[in-house]
Image (tube, rainbow, N blue to C red; front, side, top):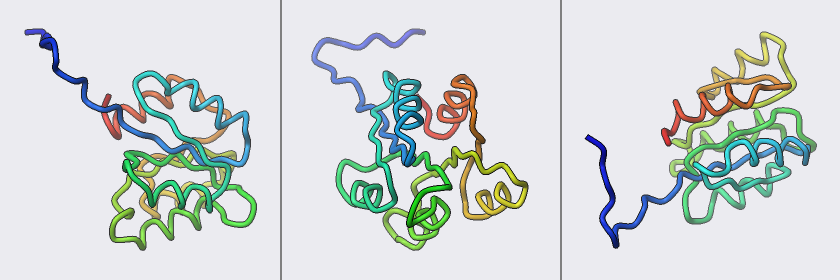
Length: 134
């Protein structure tokens, strides 16, 4: 049976995704692809990402590049995993680094998915849905 919402019933809040990439075109592209079903926030580096992760409302999924200046995506996720509060946030890498050892390192770090660029929007949507639902 279809579930009809009654007047006055609020829609559940959208899941929040933080996209971290030093490439503006990628940030915009991912945000455009996922906006609608999800609330999208972006950060151009690890410092900005950490600042956002520390604040409310909480982030439901982190989509992160690996190759970034100063602090790499791998370093960002290592620091995240050390945090008692933030360590549980699911992580997905979206990166141009496609060497097998990079993929293994990302997965060993606890990333749920490791996607390489260029990516297909459908594949990205599918993985996000699997991770955090609608």
